[in-house]
Length: 339
Image (tube, rainbow, N blue to C red):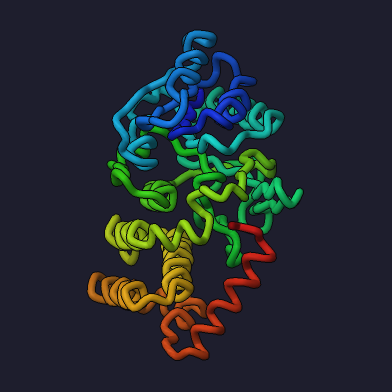
């Protein structure tokens, strides 16, 4: 069994996928790199993946699928994974190699001691290469470092501190146990990927290193604001799937439940802001429908989200209220450089 499986979803990624793949190779035989070609049409993504598979047999596996979108590519990566742990690396991002070596060293040490944690966390870095700007998201004020801990040991998450796909490595079997299957032809499923397994997480380990480098700045990138507005239906679909995927208010671990409410509030805030920025009657109506859906699905969850400052603000419908929402979002963009 491999120590770590890394799934790399690729769609017309020939221009940059090599950097992602090569940032993993430092682990040698300890890693399994699953390159998933999502039916690329415009370039030689599949050929590049196959070339790496030939060059690194037993380490790189290239899988072709008919186009199913990012979520289906993540599903395919997981289905082909054999490692003890599973992580997703988007094809335009990369790992810091020194940090990856430290991750492997730590996972090996834990395994030798008879410990396999459900969730392994590291920092991640927003890389705005065009502006030569970096923004590191770390968790030193929230989580104990360099030891196994549980939800009861966590402290308060600040608004910008969310456990994203970039920061998490999951125990592979746990992902299978929680029956995680991401929807086809849908962007922004990374939020569902990291959210749905959380009630299954009992043991965690955090290392204060900057592993994942998250590239921001391409005009065709899925998190580009204009593109997100154009894919509003997919953002709202993921938002609703997060509401549906589990009974958050029944989660026994109080701090896990509180964190999940915070995370759902963040995603619902993003959906709301994008609908307001779009300004079309259709999107404004869909915004209201999303909040009504949450209310109808679980009134207690809706009330818990609404109790937060952001949750209350998102209910504002006047022009003045909506201007205030956009102003706060704009400040957050400048501070944290998240898109």
